[in-house]
Structure formats: structure tokens, C-alpha cells
Length: 248
Image (cartoon, rainbow, N blue to C red):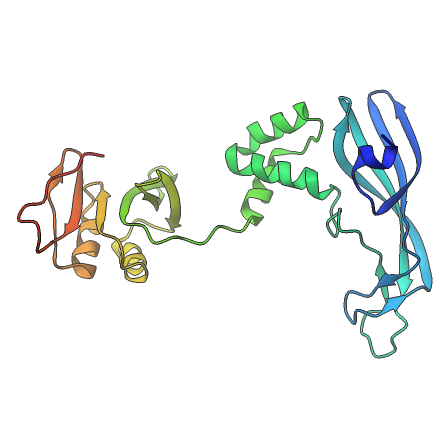
């Protein structure tokens, strides 16, 4: 196995490797002789300047890995282009990022599954350490998946700051996964959401009157059998004479 196969990034050229004090240093350059302008998409081979990017990568044999990528700046040779100088890019490293894409994918998963502090602690164990604020920022930057139309919806409130501000969490009860968060626990927010997703057949909620009135306004033909600590709303069916209460 060659060093290039071990690193797994065919774009950069590895010029030198140094391993000392549990730190694996890789000195590399981009092998392309020219680069494409990100604005006009015209290629240029006129070099303006050079600088070194410090990139964090996955550990090698339990050694923290840092890539020192020598990067060139090119002058755009298109006189009609607004961009005069641009830097060459590689698909394995995000623009303005200090991490490779594969490191970012791991940190993205940590930011969703763990809190900022726990994600930062685990990243140190994985030798790709970042701060808890970085974990929180990466969680906020991630795009949420499209909301699939739920049939059984769970509605409950939660506290942003206990006794001061509250929001509403919506859960797909068939998959037991949260699907959306509303900025408040007022009925108008839930009413707006139910109007957008009219395919909901059953709603289980707490006893807040604001949720009750919102569902009444959107679905006046629904009725409410009690189920212990929550109500289940279900649409009347011509084929069934009685609706059984469901316990969630």
C-alpha cells in the first residue's frame, strides 16, 4: 500500500511526511497546473501568490493528523470577470474549512447525536478535537430533512428557559422521531402547522387548552376520547361505530 492509498485523497501530491510526538504531519500540494475561477468558471494558469492551509484529518495509527496544504492563488485572466484573484480548490476539503470532508461528516453526526460538551469530549478521544461551541454551530448549520406527512402526531411543549419561554415539539408517533419544532406553545402555531399537513389522522397531546382549541378550529369534525394523561383525536369513520382510545 502506498502513502497516497493510505491517505485516500488522490487530488493532493504528498511531498513529505513527518511523525513526531504523536502528531502525523503531511506536507502536500495540489497537482493541477491550472485552476478554475469560481465566478466565471474560466481556467487560469497565472499564479499570483502561495500560502499554506492547516487542515485537520482523520488520525493515522492513533496519531493526530494534520495536513499542511500548500495552496496557490491565481489571477483570473477574464477581463470581464469581477473576481481578480482566487484560490485553487480540492473536492476533499471544504472552502474556508480547517477540516477535511470526512472529518466534517463525523463531527456532523456527533453534533446531532450528542450535546456540545459531550460531542467535544468524544472528538478529543477520536483525535479530531473541536470545542463545544463548534459542535453546537455545526448542529445549527445542518439542513433538516423534508417532513413526511405523519398519520399519528404527538404534540407536547418544552422549555427554552423554564418559566420564561416555551416551544412545541411535534413527533411522528409511528416512528417515535421528532419531525418539527414550533417557536412557541401557542395554538396559532399548531393551527398553522396542521393546515399545512392535513393528512394527520390521530393527534396525541397534553391537556393544554391552546392545543385543544387549535385542533378544534382546524378539524371541527374530530372527537376526543381520553387516554389517561393525554387526548387522542381521531377522525370519525363511517365504517366504525365506535373509536377506541389508544394508549401511547
